Image 1 (cartoon, rainbow over the protein chains, first blue to last red):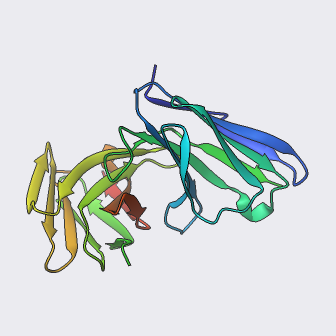
Image 2 (spheres, one colour; image 1 turned 30 degrees about the vertical axis):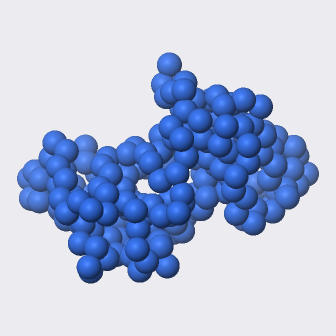
Length: 113
Length: 109
């Protein structure tokens, strides 16, 4: 099993659809993250969960809703998205949060029509 | 700001010539990390250097940190075509990791 697995790898959705991105980590880490990567912009931190508790929410619009049912799984529920939300969504995990090494998944490429 | 800024934005280097990328930031930090990303893939951690360290090596990678100048450099010695990727610095402070926009490195065969 690879360390951090994201599904689906590619997703196309209309603005009225509801979909979810899934992330699973097999590293025994306690912290999980969602990042957004858009063209020509730095990686944007969206959400951080530490021991299944949300510790960071960087002013992300409510059309993005995270869920962390346990320390190995992280979801990003998507609803009524806009075309500008098209991006690569990256999940990451780290041992204990903080400023230590991040382990990334391969990302979910989202296109909103 | 804490965010690192890489320089140059893009770099084309002949295979075998050393490749150097720089990162500058504006606030004090606890550590600085370098990551690599192949096109459309996830980021891969390369190296972490703490604020009390000045230089670190890992294989063909050499990272320096100058906290007085608030800058870091990543040197890839004898790069190969497979090293073509984007390279990001990420500064760590107050339990936050902030990424720069990255340097796109293209190694010419």
